[in-house]
Length: 135
Image 1 (cartoon, rainbow, N blue to C red):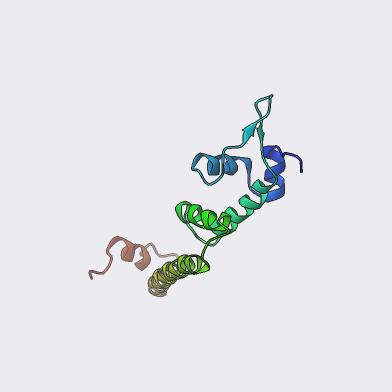
Image 2 (image 1 turned 90 degrees about the vertical axis):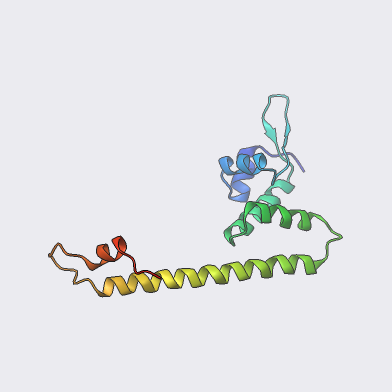
């Protein structure tokens, strides 16, 4: 297999070159070797690793968590129980976020329900934002 340029890796993985450089700078991807002309030269595996990183990020894993997942993915002697535990911890955080978002949604609906939505200048939504109820 031949080596790839950053542009080729970006096209094949669907990850922008700027993001690839960022992932390198934070240690998610190994620094590529440099060709004689100074250009980055990537192995074919970089495409697969970038797809893994992007998919993990799209599921909401932090960069630090992705680093841990990548380490496990690369380790053929890994224990799947460790991977499952990480996934379930993430599910718990997602469920917390869903509850927070549902509370935000309900608050916005309650505020919107109080507004006439007409040409008058008074707006209970703005009043509610300026003077939130005390806990």
